[in-house]
Amino acid sequence: MNVKFYSCLSPVSIALGLLFGNSVAVQAQSLESVYQAALTYDATVAAAKASHEANIAKADQAKAGILPTVGFNAGQTRTNQSSTPDGGPTVDRSFGARNMSISLNQPLYRPSNWASYNQGKKQLELAEAALKTAEQDLIIRVTQAYFDLLAAQESVVYVKAQKTAISEQLASAKRNFEVGTATITDTREAQARFDLTTAQELVALNDVEIKRLVLENVSGLSNITPKLLKLPVVLPNVKTAEMQNWIDTAVAQHPSVIQAKLALEVAELEQTKAKAQHQPTLDLNLSYGRSESLNGSASSNTVTSSTGSSSNTGSSSNSANIGLSFNMPLFAGFAHENRIKETNSLVEKAKADVNLATRGISQTVRSTFLGLMSSNAQVNALQAAESSSLSALDANKLGYQVGVRINIDVLNSQSQLFQTKRDLAKARFDTLLTHLKLKQATGQLSASDVQNINRLLQP
Image 1 (cartoon, rainbow, N blue to C red):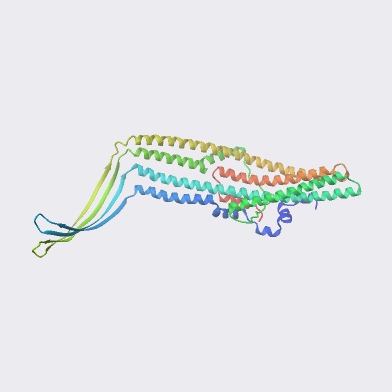
Image 2 (image 1 turned 60 degrees about the vertical axis):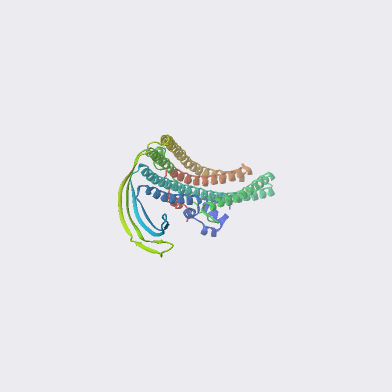
């Protein structure tokens, strides 16, 4: 097999023919299937989901401060009493009581409770933004690990192809030396390059296993073999004039900016609560109760007379109450004033955090945007370099055959061609990943983007 034939093969054919075999292609996992597995396995997303559920319950707790409270109370007592008046007989009495009541309290004016209720809703929005951040981060981590493994596998493919080409050049150098048309130097140069490529192959194979472990760790799957990229592929691209639109979208939608703005609103509500500590409160109180005295008995005893007894009849009463409860704080040892100072400072800090998040995400969008443009330019340059390297290799092989080129020229051309192929494959993966990172930086990354990339893979 000559080098020119290898250069015409797709990565799929090379990979299946040289590295993994046809059976592996049947077992290959798509990016989407790996991502779906990671959604249920990843601990970071699981923690974000649990935090989101906890904040839902916490928001409902905060709502309780503006809703009425209802209570029921019931009790029964029994009293046995014995008394001995001066000079008189001992009197034993037994009586009881039973009561029950129901009460309702409805806050009418409690600004602190309303602020807590609104804080609960903002905390829930914060948890939703944190969950979205974790899910977007998982997409990037899974895609990064998937492409890293794919690039490592293709690196093995090209190292093997280079090794095959060098072995053919080594055989040719030996034949030429045997017939006297080449020196022993050609053979030794080819042998040295073959040995070096063998070492590179071992490193590349080890790198495949390391990258596979990383992907397995993030997804929970085992023995993952990624699907190869279909060629030719149309890669995402951006234009310089679009940068400001991406930045504006990021400032409006990125979860970190949203979280910073929500944190500012929470701090402002905490400021409202601090001011409300010195404001009056007004509650509506309703209650209804019933009390009963149970029938009792009394008896008197003397030394010379028999025991006598008498009965008391029971009685009952009902009561209903409605009222307003007003409370006006007057002085709390300057705690109120200092609490307001504290919350004022926290509000200023939250405002600075919003500015920091906005500037940070703007810078991230700019750098990622430029990175995507650079990746596309690199892919175009490497595609041209691949064609040029192939032509240079063919020219050097022909020159070697007619005696105007030496063996080392052919070997260097082979190395340059396969290095260019490896760089081109990696540049394609980097371009796709950078596009995802740009969408993440603007807060637009979603599972649909995983599906879009999945369509670019071999079936």
